[in-house]
Amino acid sequence: MDQVYPANATVVLRASPQRRRRVIEAAVVQSVVFSVALALGCVFLLPFFWMLSTSVKAPDEVFTFPMQWLPRSIQWENYPRAFTAVPYLRFVENTLTVVVFAMIGEVLSSTLCAYGFARLRFVGRDVLFVAVLATMMLPEQVTMIPVFVVFRWLGWVDTFLPLIVPAYFGHPFYIFLLRQFFMTIPTELEDAARIDGASSFQILRQIMIPLSMPALATVAIFSFIYHWNDFLHPLLYLSSKDMKTLALGLALFKGEYSNDWNLMMAASVMALMPCLTIFFLAQRYFIEGITMTGLKQ
Image 1 (cartoon, rainbow, N blue to C red):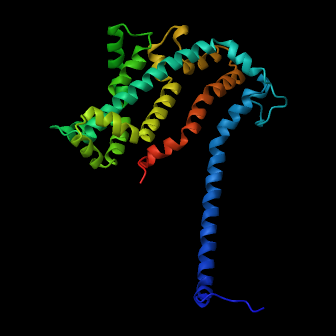
Image 2 (tube, one colour):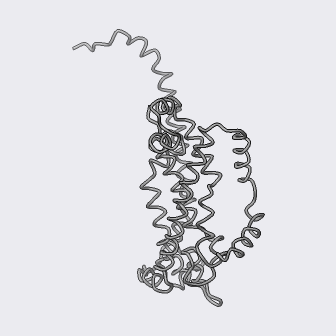
């Protein structure tokens, strides 16, 4: 039986060598990009793999030369030992107290400020917004001592207040991120709500916030990870052992004459799990918030 070709077979056959070359070039480029990304991913995963490996090693295997990536025998008991060597649950409780209240404060305050900069019209709005952004360029070391003096004068040292209260005054980066997201929402929705008699707060609560959930989730993720891993501020303001957060508690595995690196790595793995879990569960919202694609077309 003779093979039947479509009417435009001549055009397809004539263009097929060029098309085949383009397909091959695209496949080669994609393979190179994938290989480079895979190589870089492996490089960035090496410290994480070393942490996992060290967390199940015996003490004499941690700093062997040449480096021993896999332990001779897996020491699973390092995890319960790390859990009981320090008041780990107490540190987790302190960290969650700081993280939850600080995250709520940053999300609420940054949302209100961002909505004001994005939608409200008042004198000096743009100048004030530039001033807020300018604070991001100010090194934290410049204000560290004056802020500490203020908190000491208030009697807040060795409490969670210096770690929580500043979050309720907004964060410049989160304000900028939310403002840019709010500006992508069509103003026609706001105009229609105002015709129906909605106030600015009602528009924010019933229109802007529901449409901005990806951006708000991104801010919440950033805030959670920052406060969960924060070491400097708890080091400045918390002195008693019962008030220490998890980042400070990990430093207790370093003694004056010896360091329990395997136990420290086991405790670090346990401390890392909440951040990884939250990131992977909220990854879709995180990507939408960063790429400003929360509003469906």
